[in-house]
Amino acid sequence: MSCGFDKGLIAAYYDREVDGDERAEVERHLATCAECARDLAGMKDVTGALKSLGKVSADPLIEAAVVHEVHVLRPGRPRFGLPWKLLATAAALMIAVGTYVLVQDRQAMPPGENFALAPRRTQEAPLVSERKHEDLARGLTDRSEVAKTPAAEPAPPLARRDGGIEGKGRDAEAGLPAPSSTSPEKKSDDLVEKIHKDAPRDAKPSVPVIQVTSAEVALARAEVEAFLKERELATKPGAPLLGQSAYVKDHYLQVELTDEEVALLEKRLAALKKTGIARGTLEAERKRVEEAEAALDMDRKRSQGEPAPAEAQGEGRTGAAAAKAKEEDSRENLRALGGATAGRRAKVILVFLEPPAKK
Amino acid sequence: MTPPGPSPPDSALVNRARTGDESAFVDLLLRHQDRIYASVLRFCGNAEDAREITQRAFINAWRRIKDFKGDCAFTTWMYRIAFNESVTFRREEGRRRTVSIPDREDGRVAEPVDDRRPGERMEAEENRKKVQEALNRLDPEERKILILKELEDRSYDEIAEILEIPKGTVRSRLFRARAALKEKLAVLLKSTEPGSVETRPRSGG
Image 1 (cartoon, chains in turn purple, yellow):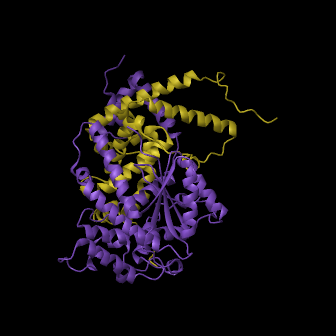
Image 2 (tube, rainbow over the protein chains, first blue to last red):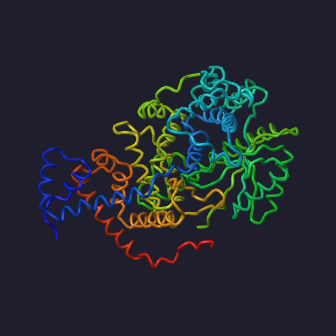
Image 3 (tube, each protein chain N blue to C red):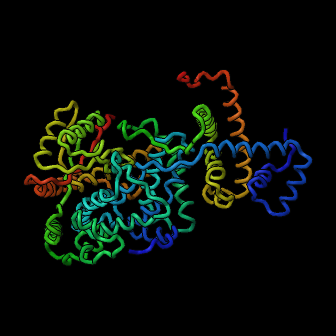
């Protein structure tokens, strides 16, 4: 049974969203209507119940995944320009990634904490990431140098041209010769060379990626962690988790290994049941994720009866383009692995994937 | 060293993010992830889904930041994306594959600090579960509006903007949503009156 009074007005009264006239009207009515008075009391109960849920803080993995996506997989640069432009920015980014992780390392991390669970930044200090960004812009400095440099100092323009993430194609472009009759591939090589030449000795040309495809991802990861522990490479429980792609749910680990260690680790992983190993580059990895996501998006759109967006269509690669990309990747790969030799430890990213689901 | 001056407003960060400034977007993430995550968590009712939905929402926001014309607050836009993701996520859930990495996928949720005795704490925890369960049983529109009003304390104007409904509808829907929650909660509380509960902790002595 209802008294016929506008119940919405009672809610508005309760939420203090009424003007003076409405307030008087509701109060007059409440004085005479037991039902509406009960409704009002009920609202207080509901508020009390919901307040008991308490406050929560965001899961730290959210930040890890989003930061990974924003800085590494899909930075805010022109995405589908000329091939040389794309490669140039990719090369710059690959270098920046190493620095990014390094900068993360620099943040005081209590023992037992891993990358993803790094100390929380508060809302009162929102500029932390900006500082991180400036460090990134500084580009290719080594660990000690990064640690020593006061954070707020503006990034020198030179360092930015050298391939800091700040470049985003725009700055990388500045260091490029004007397009001429030479082939685009040639140009990208020139630029990569240029970046390498200008970079301090310590810089790695790229971060190699080892793709671990396993039906049992957790097992493969445990194997890697055991390996790192045996070699006393892991000082923290669990190797640092670089991030997780939100869409395709792959996990990334970054470790520092010598070439020999890479080979040993690959051998051990390959010995696991139903586990495949492949080497690649960050660039290839980025492409793979883009394609996987585009496919997921298409699936989703199709299942919802929507036409595929222009962007997804643009991302779809023809066989020829994919083959070409693969060729470029393998060249990049050789260079990348070349940088990690001579018994020195270099950054390697491990990505753990599940085999593609059978349709 | 620069002194920690006033933080730039969202709109300034949005403008920078729109030009491809990654750090500006990360600042927006750090500033808003708690409230978006909390809303999503209450909407979908479990920590692991909430994490994934929140990730997707922010990643989508980053991808679409150029489409955001600034005709509403960033939070308004972010809530819309997050609620959309929440709704589509549930629809897709059945065919999703999952990777389980036990030590990292524990869906850590920072529950409020509680210094009550263990017995009381357990009771409070039970009650929280029931409240969430009652929320889960509401329809999505009712859940959204309750989250925005009761948990996020948004004004009717803001709610109208986020949900893209007239202000009059905010009033009536809020009334209905509260009444519905109260009813569901009453049913849940009744089904486990004290005495029928056999989950009391065994004391050591």
